[in-house]
Amino acid sequence: MNRTRRPLIAGNWKMNGLSAASTSLAAELAARATDAARSGSLRADVLLCPPATLLAEVGRLVAGSPIATGGQDCHAEASGAFTGDVSAEMLADIGCRYVIVGHSERRSLHKESDAIVLAKASAALRAGLAAIVCVGETAAERDAGQALAVVERQLRGSAPSTSAAVVVAYEPVWAIGTGRTASPADIGEVHAHLRQVLKDHLGPKGNDVRILYGGSVKAANAGAILSTADVDGALVGGASLKADDFWGIVTAV
Ligand code: 13P
View (cartoon, rainbow, N blue to C red):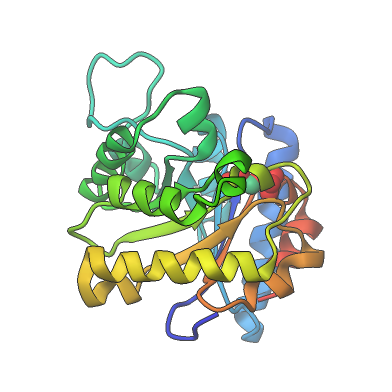
């Protein structure tokens, strides 16, 4: 962790959450974050990325608390005939400050290329949102010794080079939802490499970009992961669906 970059703990709810349970989760987290900020113990930015159906409601519940909201994806265009899609401008319109782009589930299940992810990240910046650009290798790519080359290619291909209003999330595909986390040594190696690529890509502003780790982060392993050099926070899936589990990660910072 580097003290000049404020850590970010982001919850990606994925396609989970109906209104009743989700509103109590968001309200509970907003109350805890407000208390922590008042007592001076909140050491991270906190972000919730619920499904699009809940974004407005969660946004209302966390308004006035230190918690921000973000989308899980956006279209590259601002508006138009794109049935089922949501634009970055629409997310900004309901108070979002972030949007995740290029999550491995979108890259694999929706066949999103680096070029598509770059267009979405650029749309996010156009709309005034911070883009959380996800990268990560598969198990086969890691076993073939290609992890660093894969994440470098994804980062160069999908992160806009004109702005530092970008957050990078390193999420090894084999660690997502599997209970397997990368070791702090492996995480540190990839994050250090991504930092070099960012400095090459953005110049000195590459030092300001936060690099999150994601993949089976839990309260029990968060301390070790978050104390690794160049890890500036976490992108949390399953453990972001329960207040105690998610808050355990926030307080591990
Ligand atoms: P899990 O924390 O459930 O492994 O998910 C990680 C992730 O994909 C967050 O975007």
